[in-house]
Amino acid sequence: MKTEIIPLQAETVQNLTERRAPVHVYQEIDSTNEKGRQLIMEGAPSGTLILAEKQTKGRGRRGHSFYSPESGLYFTMLYRPENEEAAIAKTTVAAAVSLCEAVEKTAGIACGIKWVNDLYLNGKKIAGILCEAPRDMHGNLPGIIIGIGINVSQKEFPEEIRDIAGSLNQPDLDRNVLAAALADRLMYWLERLDSEELTERYKAWSAILGKEVSFIMEERTITGIATDINADGNLIVEADRTYTLSSGEISLTSWQS
Ligand code: BTN
Image (cartoon, rainbow, N blue to C red; front, side, top):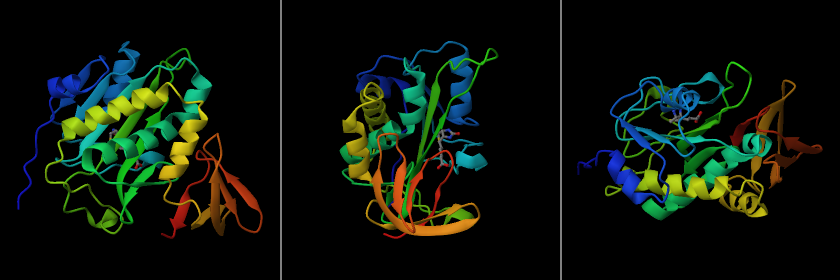
């Protein structure tokens, strides 16, 4: 059965969300995060959404590209925080929780977060998050660019990611509804970045707590059990000693489901 893809429409998303900031929709764009950078420098308001049907230069973390063909949802929200420090530390955590909640609400599926910010379903990555904090020419932070890419109705992937990539495959999933739900959950959590509730929700959605994980530190692969995530979003791993992993410095090389 061929899945019919409902086009993204700015007006539809706007009518579905509680927030009133502008929504921009592109048929094709290099990167919604790149557009976000431009708009935030030009003074676009907090909450502005940039959505695309397709990206030609989708950006991932650590300089990787993000495969972004038609049918996926490429989502960027601009955020002008009052408390810069808390925002830089916790925006990714808020984005991951918001994404799980929006997917559960619109697709009826419970995903899991692989620390720090990949969304997994049945052992495959279905979404990634890239938050960027660009500085202006005076070194000030005009805002944070929250970029989220979700694979939707995707059957084929390039060979390099075929073994790890998965997709949301609900035939009747409307990306307008998903985008609106994600925007609303983000607005909710961005106002509660310091809350214990956010850390608790993040832990509840974690796919790795209690599991065996590996990471590389000083050229050594360390394997242990992921036991906790603290209030700063650091992962606690018990191995030959207790390790407190910060997302900026270390990522997991493997985890066992
Ligand atoms: C990752 O998994 O490494 C993060 C991927 C983030 C991809 C999203 S798609 C929307 C936004 N625009 C981009 O260029 N990147 C992010």
